[in-house]
Image: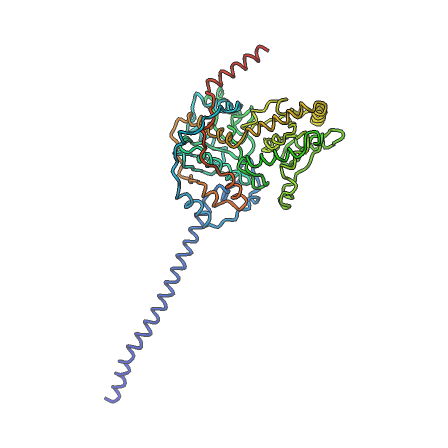
Length: 496
């Protein structure tokens, strides 16, 4: 019995000890398992967030390839945004939105739109009878960088297809949002496609309605030509161009005009001047380099190195400092150039080299009234001839420069928004369907754009922000009035 007692005590005592050791083992295992599960959960969430962010297309160009019809170096965009920032800017920034309100009935009476607004009717003429269908829109989308849908005059949806060079898409969409701010409750529902690269794509020969039996694809962009159906729209630089340190249009024009008044006409250099980038696949600009001789051709042609300028803080490229010559040359680049409005703003005589492309306002230019045309087939002699003529007729030449500057002064942001409004309004009348955003589109608001913008972009965007207008849009002549005026012009031409 004495030998059995220790055994029983040992057995009895071993149960509690074994239970405690078992509990400790189970607790450690459970803790490790729990921590592993938590880590795996957060890893899964992190991967999910990164996955969604990598598939989220933004107006800054994240996860977008360059357009096949106009490739560019994607590395030039310098996009460095975290997944959380992309998701926050894309999905959370537009949750709070102010409601649109009708424009005040006590607004000042509107004025008549400038004559070049009539181009809206001619630009949309191809769809006057057929209307704009979803099928036509889909066809245009094959050459577009993005699709734009406006609903209720206060909601903007963007479906991005390709990236645009630099920050064009960001500033273009910002301009559309400012239009909604400027004319609250007035902008109609629309569904359109936009290409923010340079050259027109809808060729009149290829898409001739008489040959195809259907209207051409309606594609918006910054310029067009007489051989294309592309619909011109104000370019992004009206709200600023961060990559080359250009300010919003109203502010930039004031600076250029002030700079043009530093020297009186008689004290300005009596030669022609051009400064720009010739390395943009432009034959005209390459030919222009050959005219760089102030004695023989009366021209000074300067090469603009934007990389060098950016590194030096743009000290030598202020537009307000480039109005010291009596004559300023405009030469198209890869297509049209945004420099046209800055050159005209100088108050110098604008020497425009046979332009092939047209932007929305250049249709308002009148040769020998607010600019002098330059023949591209005899480029250098034509420039010299214009300079000699101007120096021999200084009062007339000065008047031409002033008229060009006044034309740009009249092209204030008020008029830019008016043009946008009327173009969109007339376009909306031609839609034969009810606009609706596609499933892949994201709503975009001002907060979303500011969220994605870098410091320089944000500064320009905020400077160019708009507020409700105290006047209604200018009055656009009816299409019947436009057609009547066009017929009268044609009759006069036939008589001659």
